[in-house]
Amino acid sequence: MLKPIKNSQQYEDALDRAYTLMQKNLRPDSKESDELEILSILIKAYENEHYPIPKPNPLEAIKFRLAQMNMSEAELSDILGYRSRKSEILSGKRKLNLTMIRKLMEKLNIPADVLIQAY
Image: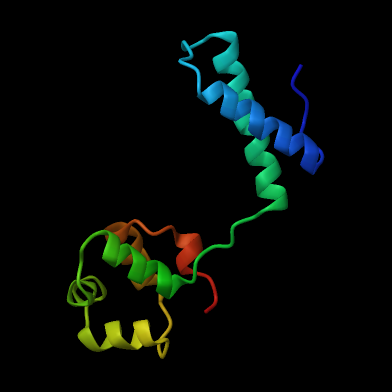
């Protein structure tokens, strides 16, 4: 019977069991596939509580997303509207405003909660 993961030993055991299940060719809606799904939910909950991943810096998120989308900084100027704003934003001299955040969310698909952080 599956139980909540409360300590590191249970966490390691859950990881081992999940790994074992992932090595099998599981049929959808089988007992083992359901077990794997539930284990993954329990593992994720434990990791979120004990190993939280911090949100990225807004400027680093913008640079990363530009690289990921093979876009140049000049294209960022087009999104923000002004070339001088782009360099001021990326250098940290100017903060993002609400309009910029909305445009970055729309064009680069960066979540608002990342863009509104203090930096």
